[in-house]
Structures are given as structure tokens and as C-alpha cells.
Length: 441
Image (tube, rainbow, N blue to C red; front, side, top):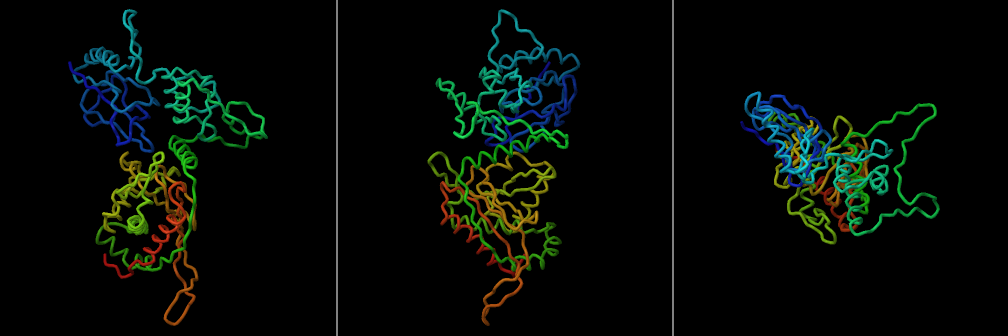
């Protein structure tokens, strides 16, 4: 008899836990090597976990929506015969005790004292609450013996008063020090001392539709609110003449695709200019940790990509300054295509040091994007429009049609002041305006 432990895989450098979305296989099902057993979610990426061996699923130790730490045993696979299931189930129980995870439907003998579960098996029942709690928050509450009434009293900083992981951990820390969390209401408003989540609006006529946010939208909402609460945002704008770029791209795009098998868009050209400008102004490529500024030597440019669902994801081009224009084009196309197909790996949305978002894709001429934490700046490229512009010539000033575009830079005013933010943005614009219209491919 042999059994194999299926563990929660490490999906990225900073990933310490994952949510189980769906068990594709159930207890008693047979699996082949590399066949998908379950689907998990880390941050914004959904991933499939394949079987390392051929065998039979003898034990499933966690349920769907459970949040499990990386390295924990999540299932047992028996690798021999039909009777291997029962044997492996007994082994799984021992493993469950060893891993501090209770085996389902198995009574604990009175003489044995079960160890505390590493992940709470019985999350707090919130069915009677009008407030939404994520599986992670409920598991933390169960682990810390926080009752529903106590959970309801925790002020939430998330969307619509949601309690986030940060909120509950802060509460637990204060609770350990014997402190109480109190929300002070504004002087002009009469409200209870505890923040209550606003109730969903109702309509007498019934002419409304209530749409529950999907998992990704909830995470985006939390991330955006956290970013605005963390960084004092300032946005600067410049208008850039990109006529040389437009004319060059129009003249070579057919040849470029025929030669390299890639469609060239404006995005890799923008990324190239950003990477050059970061070399000129390296303090835009930083993050903030407490009162320390952490300067990043690698230039990893994230590019916001729209998904078919309408959500956004930000795959990262690592070491963008080391890539040629062809290399950037291949990276942009590959990441964008796999983002739309939900095929990105967790590491490919991690480690960004600066972000580019192209609001011009939606016909917008400019935008004021929210910083992608823990970065300190994000650049938005607006739509390219042909418009009359004043051009200096040897014969004097002339009004001629030019391809113009607005760039906007939102930056964290804690560490990026107007001089640095404005100078960096202007430098990106300069590199775009100085683009060689006779550049060889």
C-alpha cells in the first residue's frame, strides 16, 4: 500500500495561502499523472493543481472556499488497488492529526486530545448577518475564537464596510493588548459606536438588479480602497506629439508581422520610453516600507490588461529595460493573450515596480489612475487624436495636423513630489517625441 500527500503548492514568491475554488475530483475518483484534481485562486490568478501520481483520491482534507496555507496537505492519493482507499483513509487520519487538521466524519477517541487545527474546520456561521465576510476572514475568526457578535463589531475598511484581513488582524492585535476598537461617528451624525455595513438598496417597484461582485472584483475593490487610503495621490499631465511613432508604425507594421509573426502595438513603444525615463529618474521606481524608501534596481513594468469579464489584471514585463523593441512586443502580446485566456502564472502578476495603463484603448483622452500598491506611480496613456498643433519650422510657426496624446502620471506624494513626478512624466514624453521615424526593424 502506498499513499501520496497532495500539498498546497507555492505559486509565487509572496504567495503564502490560496483559496480552493473547486474540487474537480472527489473521494473515490481515479486520477492520472498530471490530471487536474482541483482549482485554486491566488491573488487574481486562478490555477489548476495536477496530480503528481496516478491513483485514487482517498481523502479530501479541505472544502471549497477554504483558505489554505502553502505547504499544507490538502488531499491523499492512494496509488494501489481498490482496497487502497480504506487503508489510505486511515493513513490520512494520522496525517491529519500530524498536520493538525481534523479528518472529516471520524470521531476522536476520548483518550486522545486532538491538536488545534492549523486551518479552522468550522468557520463562523454568518448566514444570519447582513454583512459579507470573505472565507479568509471567517477562518481567522474561527481560529481566534471570535464570535459572530464580536465579528460584527469590527469596523471594516473595505468596500461597503467589509472587514478585510488587515482589519481583523488589527482587531486581534488590539484585543490581545486588552484594547477595544471603537468607531467615533462624525459630530453632525447620530450613529452607533460600531460601524455597520450599509444595507443593499431596495426599490418599491422592484426595478433594480442586485449583482454580487465576483471574487476578482472584490479583490480589486479592496486593493483600490487600500491604495487610496495608503497613498496621497497627485496627478500630473503632459500632451505629447507622437506623429513620428504613428507614421513609423503604419509604415512597418505589415513588414514587422511578416518578419517576426507579431503585431506591433503602441504599448511596447510606451514601455520602452518608460524604462529609459526610469533610468533617468530612479526614485520613481521605489516602494515605501514604514519610513524607509526601498529603491528597486530591476525595472519591472506592469501593464493593465482588460479581461472579457470587464475586470483588469496587471501582468508584469520583468527587466523591461533589458529587452529590445521586438522583445517587448513579444512580451506584451504573450502576456495580453494569456491574460484574456486566464492562463497567467501567479509569478507573472508579481514583482512590478511601475505600471502603465492605456485608457486610450477605451477612447478616453486622459485618466487619473489609482496607484498599484506597493508601487508609487502609475502612468496612463490616452487616446491618440489627430488635431491642429503649432509646429516651429525654419520658416516660422505653422499650424499643421499632428497626432497628439495626453499622458498622465498619478504618484504617491509621500515620496514623489511635483518636481520628480512632473520631470519624470515630461521625460517619458520627450522620449516619445524624439522617436526615430526612420528606425530599422
